[in-house]
Image (cartoon, rainbow, N blue to C red):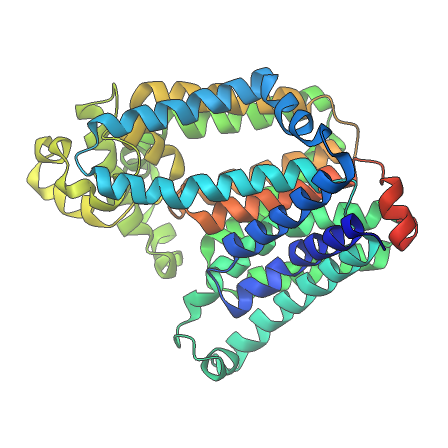
Amino acid sequence: MNAAGRLYAMGGALLAIMPLAMVLANRSSPVVVGLAATAFLAGRLIEDRGGTAHRLLRPLASPLAGAGLAFLAWSLISLAWSPFPASSLRVAGEFLPTLAAAYLLASLAPGRIPRFAVRLGAIAVVLAGVLIAVDLATDLALGRALGHRAAAFVHNRPALTLDLVAGPLALVLWRGRSRGSAGAVLALGALGVMRSISGAAQLGLLAGGAMFAAARLLPWRIAIGLAGLGLGLALALAPVEGDLLARVMPEAAHARLEQSSSRARVAIARSFGAAVATDPWRGAGFGTSARFAETPVARTVPAEMRVLLGVGHPHNSFLQVWAELGLPGAILAALTLMLMLARIARLAQPDQATALGLIACAAAIAFVEHNGWAAWWTAGLGAAISWMREASRPRAEATSEMDGPA
């Protein structure tokens, strides 16, 4: 095995173990993805020499990349009016390097991931799902042995990571005629998700599975249309989500979702929606959600709704875009999402169905959970996209030579 091959083996192994690493340390994915991206970049530089820069820059000329870069540019411009520039820069300092690592990984890893890394990835997902289930069934015995907090929510991030990675990795295995391993990845990954206390992870699993089934059964134009409608409504209705849910969500549903704090989430959405309604044009500035209660716009919100602006983020990434980046951010986000669907429309089956399932899963989670700029979330998406692209790319000769055909 030559030097490039050894680096690809290292990068592939790191990509593979990421879901298991998240179970053992639920903030580890940005470091793992960063190291994997570095390994693949070094391998490509050795193998391609002068061609690596072209390989990385060429995709940035597409309309999809242009929309994404415009969104990032607006995010950086918004730092100019952020009332907390140090906090905004800290958020950007976590998000942007992880985003760059995810881009490097998704651009350079496909076609260079060794076959053993695919098998290792399957083992990692299976072990991650089993460990989550066993640890929760044994009152967090594993977590206490590792010195973790004795709280069931420590498995929420690993479960959400399984949501993202399991489907694309199963497609790689299925393409490699490892049908049993693909089934084990889906089944035991789902076990970890369903056993966790994360309602967002379970919602993502259901949404992703339903979208995959729809994309396999319906004509592709209808499936793409459904995905576009869902994403468009999620973004367009985000500022009024809280008011809508307050009117239509029955008390019985709140009682059933008590563990997910549904009443509090509705109240939080109403508070952030009121802030957006007060100043929808430019937002409070990138990365201000953590201190949103202290922003100037928060002082214009009725006092009874101001308290919940201090929870740290609106528990809805679409609403977070509105609150921090205003109407321009929402328009650029919508454009990016629609161009992404146009790109997916060109894929063949079952790649198209798997990609739509991943999008539905991620969108459902983003609609109810977490800070949209969280590094662990960005790293998980980068890993999932890397596996997704691996499934649709022919294996490189260098990989075949080092490990045999996949």
